[in-house]
Length: 235
Ligand code: URA
Image 1 (tube, rainbow, N blue to C red):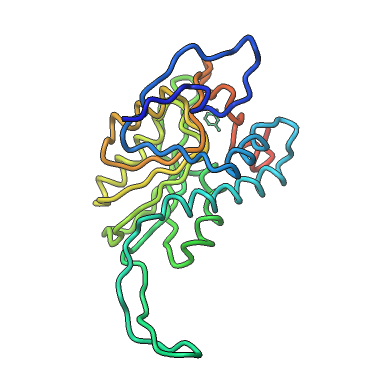
Image 2: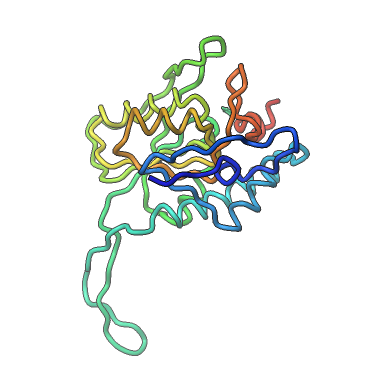
């Protein structure tokens, strides 16, 4: 297991009064995507002056980076012999039947970036929200087909706060029959990533930053604010 200083994990610019005092151990299947472009874009997303249009654009660019990183290592299978302008070559294609599962609303902000890289993936939405007083997940939309014919699913949600919603979404997909799951987020709280990895130790989790704190009302600190509101200008 990798031990990560919180400052490195968060990549946040820290004020002198908020220096992290400790380190924590990343669960084994958590991958921190610390590509310089991801860190640069994260800093833009955190900035409260950034308006919805730019927030959407940068989130979309971030989704591309996360799609590239999280598809590394996927298997390809050979197809038929094809011809280039110069000679024949062996065709290949991705082996897995892939779907993306955006958790509404904010997960929708990562869909286009993933579809640019995986244009034949199915998109299956899951509607879950956090009930304001309890912060517990409530399912309000689920149109999964009756049979699971997907080999690999990418669950998309920019934020893992308490992880209640993330854990519930993965439960739903496992109950449906999905065997391989990768969870994609931009920012997680330390508490949230530990809870998600504990509840579902078999899934891969990709995240750009792990922030130290969760506020009393369930916001990640420093976080991005309410990602759904910032995407859709509903604040
Ligand atoms: N959801 C968000 O959009 N932001 C948070 O900080 C926590 C949950």
